[in-house]
Image: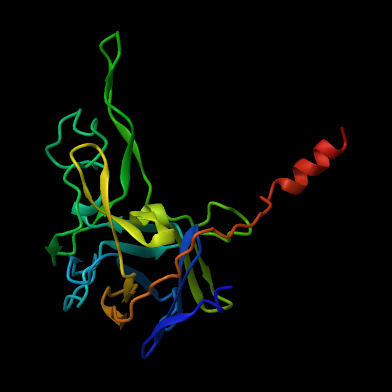
Length: 262
């Protein structure tokens, strides 16, 4: 599947392949340096190349020519995440100076896509799951949440929760991202969120497609050893009826054997 994904960009040492289906955006990187000697940062511009963050997180040197709303940071198989430009996160995240009830509103009512910065700041995709509470005994319970952007390493054939995989035999770094994590509200028509409305809804617009800015950083020295700047736009095909397929989870055969003996 991954080798069959169309090539979007090709540089001196890196090749970028991008594809999509009704569930996911697919990104594959091939070439040099290998993941064992470098870590990767991939900026994703989802709406208007003249808006967004023009410096990738942890990447020194000249700023990119295209602003990114999101950045994928692949440090190691146990440390990878999708990050978002601070002004484009639809949910509130922990901030310095925030009081104990600061996360109780859940939504970032100031969210919008129309900012421009070049300081390399990106936030996690933190979302509050439990508001701050005080019990009848007077004991307080701090707000809790989860980072939706944490990426799980593994093969999708082994776990349906896997988000990315380093296939050393094929020389590929494979990544799939659910549309909702990229603020895509309707992938069938390329609709993305652009801002929050005061009536409690979100305003959307049609994007012309996505652009990708790829940087490979030396694991020991941290400098950029390969760069594939954002150029060609990836506009995935729209649809009226989604394609779908069934897949068996790894536990299926074990459950079949147990229940079949009853």
